[in-house]
Length: 616
Image 1 (tube, helix red, strand yellow):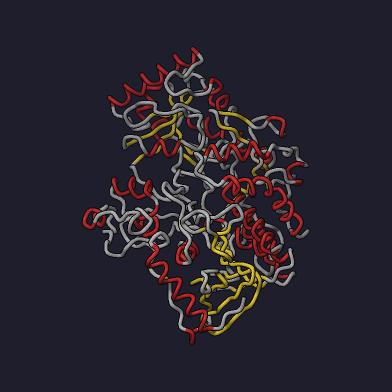
Image 2 (image 1 turned 180 degrees about the vertical axis):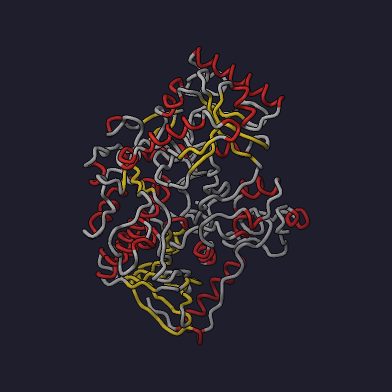
């Protein structure tokens, strides 16, 4: 549909007015202002604004009003079938799939072309030919969908999960197909990539691996943080990390099919007609505003909101409450992602965010030591054990809720036997099938551990085996011939040390009985800590909390990723979301049956959406 400028401005004004009165699509009334000093002063002075006023439980207006673009400021108009806002993992895959389906495509990306970068190293995909040829395929997708839903506590859209699980394999194989012969991106034999596997479980017959009641599948392709040996689209390969490389190949393939990237251009506001249908988007480019008309759809793929402190403060209750209670300022609670611009655009157009509790990767507080979320006994500042340590991926949220002070993991000379039983969840020890074995990272870790024995109170550096290809992941580990001496090295005072020794004694007794009568830890993990030398690592818990890597909460959509209004029923015609703009993927937090699910969903949902729009 083509709108003249008068109708465009009329539609935008009408939509903005509707947002102001509807409430459920707006942010929060601007009458209350937060202190910005890590307290709830704003809310206590003016009262928490609730559903009657806004549709959101928050203390201030995180949304604001949609920008009004003057007609005279629009310097260019572009007519295409599909407009993609954001050129990250979801956006670039959406653009490529739409172009491969024969649609005309414009992609709007805020980064400059010459320095474009994309984050991440782990990519989850199920039943691809690439991984099936390595023996890791033929998985029951229904089981995997069910596990995602269970881990999400039912607070997800099962059809959104299903579209990822069922179509991620085709997504990965398409990436292989578009990668030129000049790249060694998918070279397993030299360790440029690998698949995370459990110990001596190299093929699909061992999966799902069940630990602490959670199922896990080996299907995470890990890109090793290395660099290609040849130039990539004219760029020095030393400046192009692996996921950036694959996104450059994606763009080049899409451009060959006629798709156009608009660099250094920021999507600003959606265009709506008198019915509220989204017909395009206005974006700010280097030379002024560009109006993009989209006859099939606009796709919001602009990423998360973790770098927007106002959105984090008002929308992530577990982050702001834990942080504020412990003296954090809101600007310190942010993560490493985007500013939430696409989500705000969707809300201005009539969409809504998924409800509390909204997920983020705030589970990224490091478990002590270089062993990942190891199943070793974990001891809090009071000297007490506090969880089933085999629940990989749930360590950090449990740790954040412990008394402030040291939290330690302890083990003994037989530590390797426990690590061999680990799950393959996000954060688990990584036994790999290529790079880890080629470079003998487990051997290096054991040599580092041996060096701890004579290091005394100074401890020694030990390389990580949870993400072994990241050379910077080094942790301090202490060793001692007695647990009493070890807990002293780890910073426990006499009272806490006494309790810690009693906790380990109790743990050893339960190991002898083969039953964790406190927290129900799997019997395979119940290995006593009784053989010197004893090892330990510690992290200090100050109760501080951030969004971690990215936020994972997004807009409510149907199973086709069409953005819905607040009734969860009425679609906003022409408006779609993928990546971290897409809601109902993770429930209350990031717990997944395979590592790399965040990026896997972004890549796959972007591709699924592009194919869907091209076929319309």
